[in-house]
Length: 124
Image 1 (cartoon, rainbow, N blue to C red):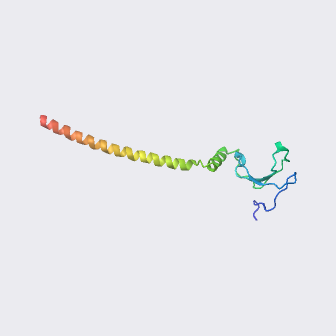
Image 2: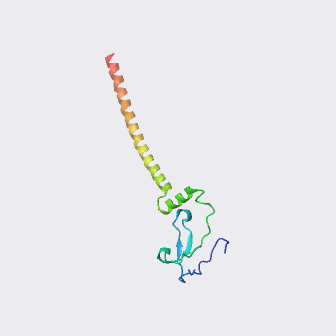
Image 3: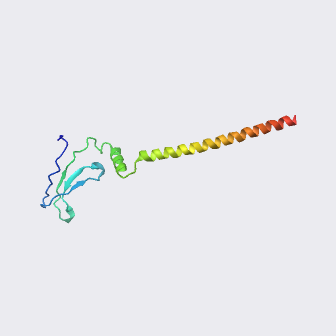
């Protein structure tokens, strides 16, 4: 067993003498960390027992708030990388459409130039 791993086969008993469920933190500063905690909230006369299972991350989210923000966005399914890839596809599609329009416009312009040249020659 590595020094960072914790044996969670043994359940914790809180001060209410109840087994504590294993929970996962959803707070930005500890997102994804597991812990044991009293099942009864303190507001309902719970004992307030609490013990982290997972070690504290080596990067402090207080020092790097963008890490916390990124973790939350990824967990919420709002992956900015996927959105950027989709935006890139949309822009590329729009570029291709505009290139086709430009090509058509240039062909029309060349045809008009040819007609103008013929008209000038006929006048002379």
